[in-house]
Length: 613
Ligand code: ADP
Image (tube, rainbow, N blue to C red; front, side):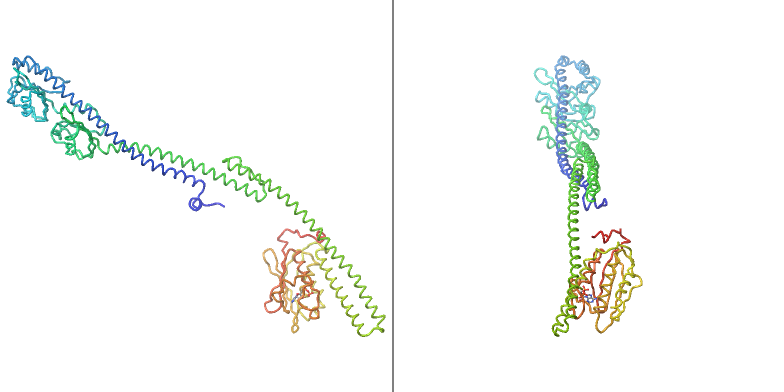
């Protein structure tokens, strides 16, 4: 049986679809595991990003510290210059200016007195009129404490730009006489950040102790001088370093790592947008998923091919299995899965066993048939001989009873004649019975080969044999115009018609002349011949019995007969491969039906009379 692909997929799963289902079933937990893995991976990636950010923030803070400490050290060195001690301001101006170069983070030195008045500024020629210090508060601290101080971001007095300065005290006669400032531009702070060469997507900023942005890698011009994000500033106040998730001033969702210098209280913050963390993770996850999808597709493709091969091999087993049933030679598979090859070998072994069994069976059947035929022959021979030989003593009984009546008739009384009559009648009846039995036992033993016979001709011959009975009964027999020509034994089939027509005439109604009708109907490869009469009919319960030997429904006084006619009819029909039965006639009477194979449409293999012994 073949199934359409749809049936195969939905109604009855094929090996191939089952294998694919297995691959997919294993892929589901893998996909779930991957999902969990992806989430973990994202968490780890985020954590790693945070650690990286924090480390960068620390590195930047120490770079910033280094920057300030260079400025501080140089300023402290200059503060003890002999030129200052001798109030040689012009000389000091030149000396300080000579320190400023590209590698020095500061851009100017400023000397101010306690009132905040700038006495010299290296970005101005010496002697020029100068404004007051831009960050008097920080200045005051230095005069007050005598210690260096780093300012917050403020507007420079000369530059009118945001600057940061470190003030160191200049001592004279045991007290602070001046404050020497080293100024830093925000550009130099920004350079610290840019020198770090941050990876794509990262932004860094430097905040002064008030949380004001002093430098920024992005949008510095707009944002320097403004306060940082409030969430971040809150955290900076309470911790020296940490991670904050917030929005930047541009409104970007970010993770910020910050680190505050314990020396200066200045803070470096470095941010990374969410999207970057996510994108970096997703890239890797997509790569893993892509790889797994390719593997899965490769798995399904492999299973598709292997499943196809397996089902082909299994289907290939159908041929040897069918061969086993039909007796054709079983061909052993020489390729495909080992299991299929093994099964085909097993089928081959079964074929051998089956062959042995068949041979054994055939031998047994042949032996039994031969034994049966022998015993049948013996039995038939016995019946034939017995009935033949019985006739002789019977004839003798009749002749001597007759002789008795003739020769001693005058000496016998009426009773004796009556007894002689009974004895004669009994002997004659027995003779008749034996004759019929002899005829019965001869069925199938008669001469003549099966030959094509026109049934109409045979029925006519039977009628001819019955012409006296027909005349006596005053009946009519109607033969259908067309009766088939069939292969059979002439003598026996004539006798069959004779028995049936004879009965139809015999079992007539007393008040009605018999009418017999003979016709034939096709039934597949057979013909059904019907002999219908208008006689006394047969009750349904006797319709089986009447075909038995010596089975009669009436006494001899009512209807003559031996009860062998229908048994002979049955034997003849069955020897011709058909069967016989009786059914109701449409009006009254009975219809005897029998089938005969149309041998013209079949191979002629009917055994001849001689064949049957
Ligand atoms: P018999 O020698 O008694 O006719 P058969 O074997 O021919 O023996 O018939 C068996 C019995 O079947 C008969 O005794 C009769 O009762 C019944 N029978 C046979 N043919 C007919 C018929 N055409 N109509 C009615 N009864 C029949």
